[in-house]
Image 1 (cartoon, one colour):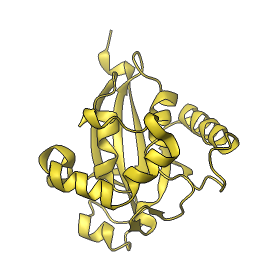
Image 2 (cartoon, helix red, strand yellow; image 1 turned 45 degrees about the vertical axis):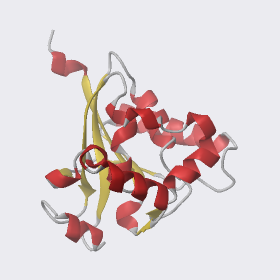
Image 3 (cartoon, helix red, strand yellow; image 1 turned 90 degrees about the horizontal axis):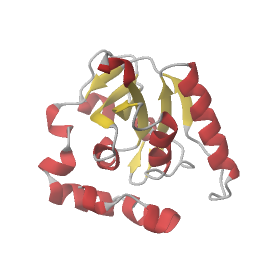
Image 4 (spheres, rainbow, N blue to C red; image 1 turned 180 degrees about the vertical axis):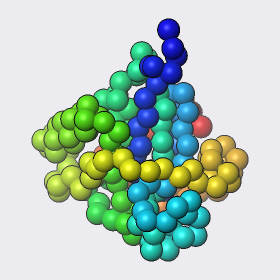
Length: 186
């Protein structure tokens, strides 16, 4: 049987892509994560172009996973625990539409699951504001420059300082408590 038949991609925007790779990298069933840019109107944008906010791109990670081991719904459960889904056009210290949160669905089934997942979070009562995370069709993906890939591994001290200093770590601890990202995964 073709191994590729069981692989699926999830394209997720959760603010700074450096902080989005670690929670997924050690999940059973995740084959790979790649930091990059989705949407926008410039082909092969650079980090500097995307950071300017003028290209229309969003920082994302693209997660390739084996559906025999992990479902899209389970991938989304991890996604929600890494972000502030009520923030519009920002995540923690990063401000601008390039840091918004979004689920870019690859097919109708992913759209259905993403919308159900978002609705369940909205109805959970966990947040006192509406969920701002967009559910949008996937259009394109451009991998980020090599130095951004697995940044938490290549620059662990800077990554930990950024994650803490941005407010992400404290927020996730407050909202999710012990259910937050397992720091030992890094």
